[in-house]
Length: 389
Image 1 (cartoon, rainbow, N blue to C red):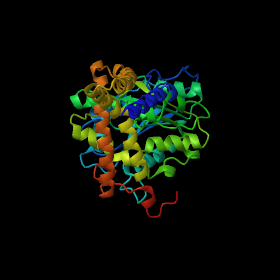
Image 2: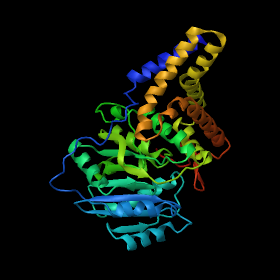
Image 3: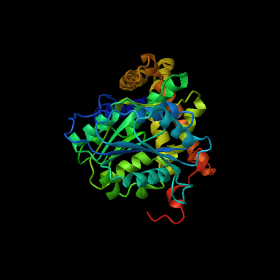
Image 4: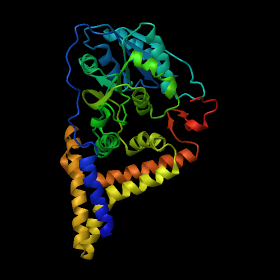
């Protein structure tokens, strides 16, 4: 146990200093200047059974205070709750940016529903010849100046992609325990500072808010090149960066998710539907992830308790120091989410939940129910018949 605790502490010291300072939350929209001419932007919103959240999100897009030309394309992806008609009604009620509602029909084999809807929306938008596309989800609300600042940042920095990790809702007890940790773990996997650095291989985006240069999308064959991706935002960023594009990702200040996850079951489904896909459906990577999560997050409190109970001072000290470093790195994310700091020492418990969610994701996949979302279940990419990529 002493050597294991020492390995855990070493891992935390490496994460603290050598993993792109992932724990810092000061990566916000980069320096930006307003351009002399504002480019034309088309906003593409894929939506499937989103009538519950659309009244809190769509009006915020229609009300964007953007100096240039902008319009919204909402793609109703086979909804059964009247999403498309509700969108038209909200447009009539609130006015603002022009709204077009389209419907692509059921996705063909090899396509996820969301990316098939995005493809249809981009196709409608291309007829308008925009310079930028804003890909955003139906549960994302934007402050009035959000689009303006995204475009200014993209123009100033010469970015092909500017993406913001929307601030997720944190109200219920389970949301407080799980949601900040979700963003913390994401930043640990994909340190934001590395993503924006030219020459870095780290690539990721946050699907709720992606401003994408239209020319770049066409050159990278988006979304066709990533049509089977369940984690489509990361796949999009890799496609753009792999083609030499410059991307940026950071935390949002004026972009918020309005989707509630009040119960643990809701959060469990959100994570488990894509966790095994993140591991490329590999049992080897799953085993390594479980061992890694246990070593990094579970060993410190166990070593502290075991050391104190058994009189092993060295074990207790090593475990306590590792837990202290872990807790300290989590504090900035809790502050960003305006949550009480007493939640920070509970990160090992939350990590244990994520470990279970990841294992459950693999179990559901092997039962044929993996990557299931809103009535659809997606096969792993190499099982798709007729896939040419």
